[in-house]
Length: 145
Length: 79
Image (cartoon, rainbow over all chains, first blue to last red; front, side):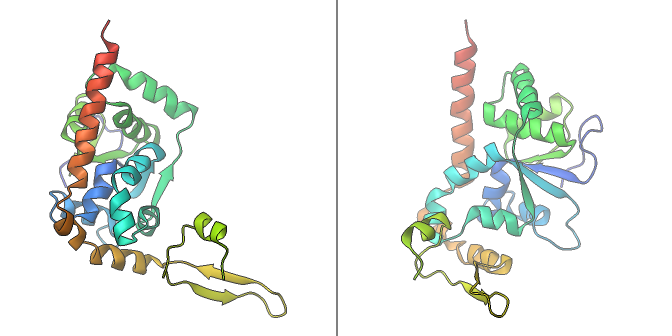
C-alpha cells in the first residue's frame, strides 16, 4: 500500500472502497488485484473496517452484471463475505456530495465515494487515478491500488 | 418446492445448494441458508477464468464509464 497522503482525516483504520477495488479483486490479471486481496481478505494483515457507498455498489453491480450472470457469484454476498458494510447516503453525505461539485474534475459517482470517506473520516481506496489525484489535491487521505 | 416468486426475491439460482435447518422441536419452521462466506469466495476463485474467456476488463470498463460521466458533467456546467 502507498503511504498516507492528506491532512490527517482518514488516517485511522476505517476505509471506504471505490467500485474499482471490488472489481479488481475479481480479476487476477488486473493491476491492483494483489493489493485488493491484501485490503479485503480477512487475516492478520486486515486492519481496516471497510465501507462502500450504495452508489458505488450500484456501479459494481452494473459493471459486474455479466460476470455474476455467467459465474453465479453474488457480488453483494461476496462483499458481505469480506465484511464490507454498505453505507447508505444520508442528508449529510448528500450535502458533502453537493459541496464536492467544486472539484471540477470528478463525476457524481466519484463524489459519492469521496464524500462517504470524508463523512466517515476514512481513507479512500480507489483504482481510479483521476479520483485519487483529486482527493489528494483536496487533502483527503487516499490510496491508489 | 419453493415458489418462483420467492426464488426471485431471494435471488436463488437453479442448482444452487441450500442448507436446511429445522426450527425448535414441535414448530414447523425451517431455515434456508445460502452460500457460506467460504463458498462465495471459492466460487469467485473458480471464476477467475471468466476474465480470460471473455477478455473483459471490468475495472477499465468502470473507468471508461467514469470518463464519459465526467465529460458529460463538465459539459453540463459550461454556460
